[in-house]
Length: 241
Ligand code: URA
Image (cartoon, rainbow, N blue to C red):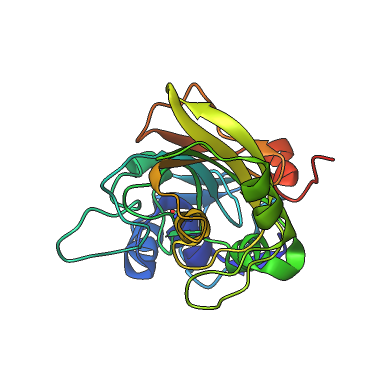
């Protein structure tokens, strides 16, 4: 992780403001290698130094990655004056400053969403150039046929003329309803809904179950989340095939 100012590291890992971090240091609540440190600007290396903050569970990590099973009715934004956001439902022990969703799911879409404070990671997931496939399960108004699958797999053109990259598609039964499992590597606005709309079909329900090779943990109920392990994080950028 390298050398960092003590107040910055505490703010980041204890989810407090820089001002509060400086107060903790001034109040002698912080030890580095069992020595009380009173200088906020002291440089420390969280990988090497043993840092303890009284009253806080200090675990130094440069970034945090949270798997959320997004429920319906919350929006993929960091803050909103009226609507509940995916950040609002993250429990306090995982909350940090600067958390945001890596990509967005519509308000009525459920499933796998990664919440992080790592901008470079989020960019890598979202950019089509990095070819990270996202897998969705849909309930549809009508069953799809071979012709529909071919159109989607060739790269369908949306109603407004937008061309989509080729998708991978197979029929799927969604809670007893006709549906499809579809993998896409872009994130255009309402993309999956618009892709099926271009076929004269309609998405009734939508959930994301996978990003790269990382599958949604089925033990997480909708609205629940947990931190990703280092191995799981790698799966995001691992191809399945
Ligand atoms: N495509 C959609 O139409 N909606 C989502 O939430 C995600 C992908």
